[in-house]
Image 1 (tube, rainbow, N blue to C red):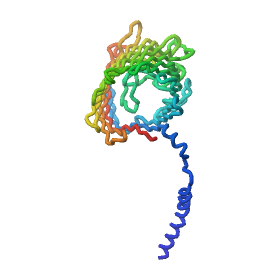
Image 2: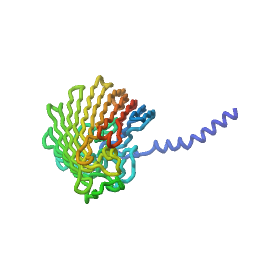
Image 3: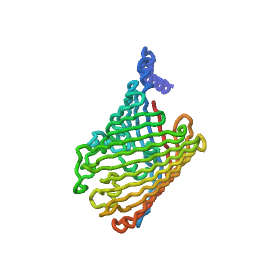
Image 4: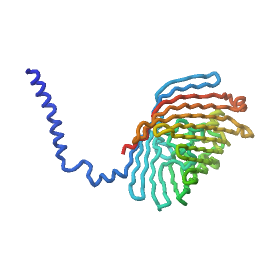
Length: 387
């Protein structure tokens, strides 16, 4: 009996301070966030995006073979967007599973993907200033990396987020034009390549990229186009000519997308051919040509099937000719399952098959050998709107 009474008294003494705090909070005459400020929250969006997966993979090439099983955080990012004024928006996104070292050219960490202002100059003209996504065309590039399990070779190596200025012009209801002037890279050339340079390569006064873009809509929105043309100088007096022709057709439950990419690079910016040559010099006069096709079909509100097919061909200057170096092939069938109506949470099952076929020239002269990679992934994709 005494032990029970003692336990009761101890419980009362421990709980009394919390009860007093609760009474004080309940008696507040004003909310912690003033009513006049609550309206501001309607103009703020906070997002948390993640892709987490369990993967099993194999690699086969020449005399090499290895496999593995693991969990992986494929994409994790938090974004903020706010309407600061009727004509001014702010956008920011931090990707957590990306290096955060401050870049020597734009003075931001590479994990900061977006940090820009969007100013409405008029009903048809917008001005963008800061670190943003380049206006490259095509629909492969349109997807957030959260939704892309494997990019084709160009977009897997392209520098997508850079600092500069851009302008968009809604010329007609179904046609928008965009123009950007950007840094062509985030780091000084010497910091990227170190001592691995060609003899006649020099740092330009301004490593600049100019990107033009056209978006069109036809057949009451069923057919869309997303074309771009860009030039960027990576080094003095030499640069990259890159254009993309993107097409999208959508009708009821079916969506088809096809991109054609062409990149001629007087100095190899993707690094694929440079790595194949392996001679401690940057490859020059390199060409990449790609095709990308994605089909989506919604079987029901909860199930959707995807199929992505891709090819990428690389040519490199060996002596006097532009030789075919390799062609890569990719296939990614995927099934999405979305169990909830009001929350965009998707479980997926996917197979990723990649095959890299080297030319006779690369096999005979560069000691290359063809190989393939295979993966099975089970995971979830969660683009969550927190606020």
